[in-house]
Length: 237
Image 1 (tube, helix red, strand yellow):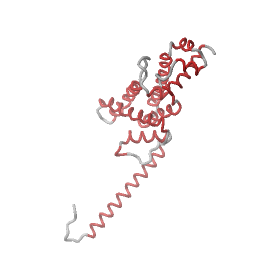
Image 2 (cartoon, rainbow, N blue to C red):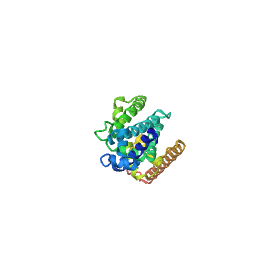
Image 3 (tube, one colour):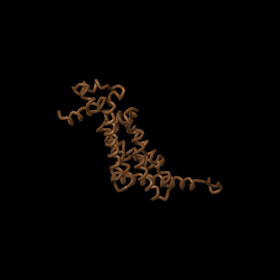
Image 4 (tube, rainbow, N blue to C red):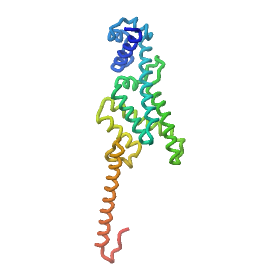
């Protein structure tokens, strides 16, 4: 192997071992053995497991941050931005499970790298900008944008940690439910959330008709009750 190829091999081996065993459970010996090299080769490229771990964490940090940032800058509607961000995180988890397992553990103090908390804080600062625009558009106080950004990012991140092992339902369905709660709130949850705008419009139309029919039945029942009341008995308020 060339020096570059060997470095990439060691990063791949280290990434897998750190995900399985954590930083403290992984030694230079196990990294070297898994890579089929001697310990001095690991030291030559990274100066020890701390250096290797730092590069692995930094790579995953930047990869996830880039995915979420692209989602927030894309999309024409704010709901679409939220959908893309939630789906991007879940896609990252699905395709980079080892990387996410490493990120959700706070980075080892000796590496000098950021922790998962600092990653979420960085993402929240970018979400804050988007939320600030949305709040101003509705004439709300945009000073609450940082708080709402932390809430949204925390909700999505914790759901991602749960889904890392659960893996059900599928990521599109999980993202749809996440956006359903974040966008509509508990009082306005959609019964059948979806990421497809056309299906969502059909579902909203179905719910509107359902509510109209329910209101008509209630009005009909109330009218029947009024007709059946004797004239000398005052109607209930």
